[in-house]
Amino acid sequence: MAEAAKPTGKTPVDIDIFVEAGDWPAEVELTRLVDHAVAAAIAETGVSGASELSIVFSDDAHIQTLNAEWRGKDKPTNVLSFPAFSFAKGDPLPPMLGDIVLAAETVAREAALEDTPLANHITHLVIHGLLHLLGHDHETDVEAEEMEAIERRALARLAIPDPYA
Image (cartoon, rainbow, N blue to C red):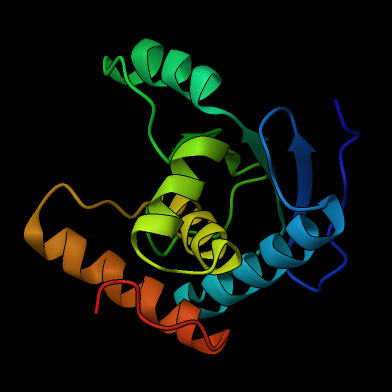
């Protein structure tokens, strides 16, 4: 198991990265991707204040266990978000946002199926997971359209093509 790494970017969020399991890019690359993703999402949402965030890079087996326990869905998924505090859109950031967990095999499989560079897909999923922690959801069509629009704008800031196109 690898040690936690700290991104070096300038966001109001202190980010801890932990590579728990799975075949992921090097930690220096993950740190760069996460740092840029968080900065772009924060810029697009306009949230303010300082906070902390944990990102865990894991595998399908672990995320399947989490998905079954917390969502009642006994299957792997690409990303899960676990908020530390309740957060409503427009509020200042809470002291801790929570955890985002990604699953290596599912993320790699989706990137290959979508013919998308793995780095772009990881970035997208970090943004997606962070938006959940910031009070966004996609349970209704209106919510999904709003969340996807923020994702698109954040990805465009990073010169990453629209994943919904």
